[in-house]
Image 1 (cartoon, rainbow, N blue to C red):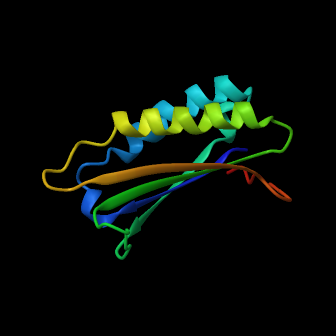
Image 2 (image 1 turned 90 degrees about the vertical axis):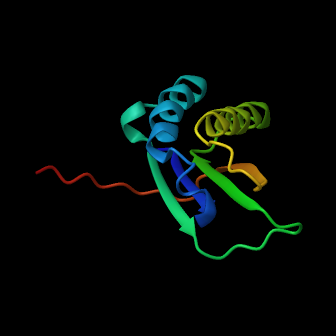
Length: 116
């Protein structure tokens, strides 16, 4: 279950330890929301073009979870994502990075596992 999409400015590509973020975030989030670790999936999307109001760079994390969790738990999950993200993003001299997170309920969800 949790589906995580991380969009990040191309200018942060060398400074952002993407695998490290996912490896640290998955177990911490699983424990927080009571989810099974093997169900976590994170995709990273490098943004070649993004315009921020005052310039700079961005990383936006979208976390979609199955419905049923209250807003307080979703807020905790968002803060957890931002904390882990900050630990895996090195500062880039002269560049301000905005880190944001959205936690939402996953809509209709289907899954098929194909064993090899």
